[in-house]
Length: 314
Image 1: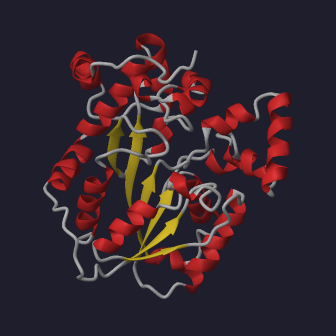
Image 2 (image 1 turned 90 degrees about the vertical axis):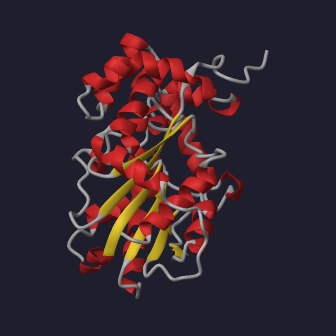
């Protein structure tokens, strides 16, 4: 029998109300990956996922930001924003454009809000190291004095590696901030799963050959890779905005069930990565309840309009 969803619908209002005392006990902080794994063991995956969403929503720095965002218009404008957005797209963005990994939606909305936008031509199945070099070379040639980086999924890993590998270059000083959408900024849990056994490693080595890339692509995305061992600390002058998907088990549809289950021992996840790993500490976060890693939903467009209108003044 076909399983269309992982489980039946959940009363999200009741769940949030029941978890309010637990979220209050966090004292305005956001639980770590390790803490969320403990909460999953104690209370279940739905409760841990909702606790993460609520903790992000009510954290003092985020609650004020989200209130201000709600007041922003969804208007389009022809007035230049005075800054440029450079996009680092997701893995396979050139192979499967229907998925949206090329960031076509945020690109269109950023332009409608007055931003100049350009996609950096990273390799669609390039390694993190290869794409970090492409980002570096592009920014060295970039003429705009003030740029925002918008990264999606693996694009976040590529951009973080760029910041670490080329930290001494002056061009970084022109980066106003980082818009991190479901970023693999601490590696990817499903990559860990895919290389966890000899049989899986053999399978994915063969797949990498078919795709015309190296197995290094997967090994670099492992959460244990050297790129992700140290805490992520973007340059102090850069503002960081996280747009993070947090689905409950009841939101997981047929095509993602296996991947979601495969990494459920790591706590709340979006079917590719533990949700908490997509949140860069010190940044402001928009949590998207019910969304998975592919970041599809009916409310994304109005939120992005409000966000880019907010960004015009930053």
